[in-house]
Amino acid sequence: MPMSPIRSRRPARCLGVLLILALFNLGLVQPVAAAMVSTPALLSQAQTAQQRAELRDMLQREEVRAQLVSLGVEPDAALARVDVLSAEEVATLHQQMEELPAGGGVAGTIVLILLVLAVTDILGWTDVYSFIN
Image (cartoon, rainbow, N blue to C red; front, top):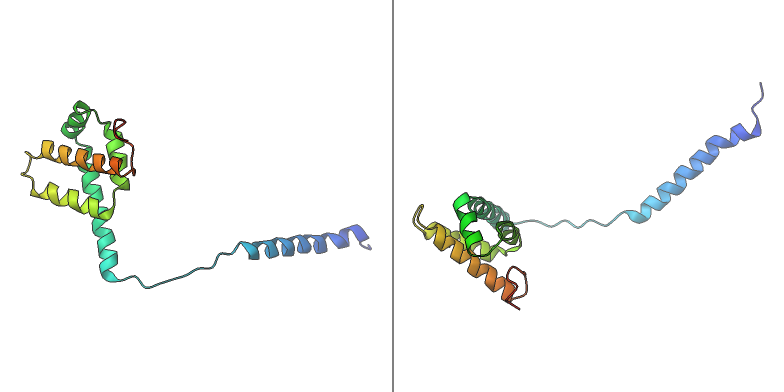
């Protein structure tokens, strides 16, 4: 049985469409640049991530959340601000948290966090306090 001309063009048409799509895809490929990452830089990033996680854990404790609310700060907003702190700010907060006595430094830590949030508000990085412009 002879093939009709319509059926014989179908595979060629599908192949043509696939080739056109492949050509369009070539324009979407982004160049990739790779560089060596030093061990100290990698360790610093890991340490900052660990310190940030410890700050988040501390802010999720009930007594800390209650203290934040009593001072007029939304606990979820404070948690969100921890994510935007720089590595230096996280390290400073973590170091001061380590220096506080165990169990007795919750109020001191909260005051420290409020001060850091006030400084970031003054610098324009955050908007926690509406009275700071």
